[in-house]
Length: 94
Image (cartoon, rainbow, N blue to C red; front, side, top):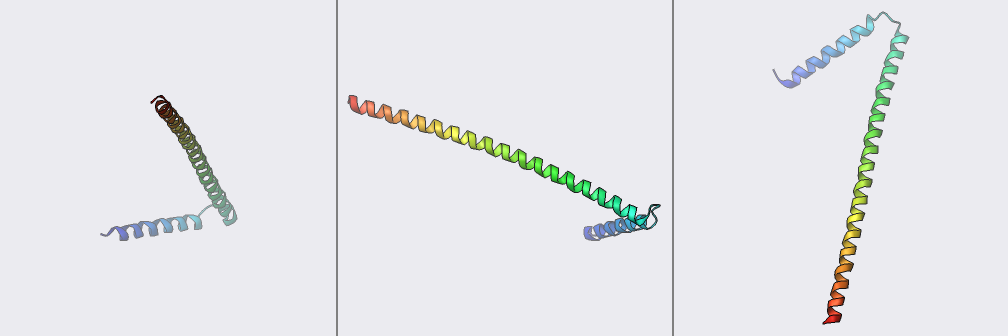
């Protein structure tokens, strides 16, 4: 059996189960729709929160990397200035 047919069968079975569950549910349709909407909103809000947390984490990491880069650049400039100063002193002595 091919994987595609298996997945199609599983998806069809799940859809039929959901449809049957909704049709034979003991609640009114309006209550069921409200429950579905509330659950969907909960999932969406949860996903938004996770995305915001990931975004915030990435922003903090990016700021940290920028700070490290700036520190390394400052160190490089200080080393270059020290090297140039030594070279000038050596040239003046020679």
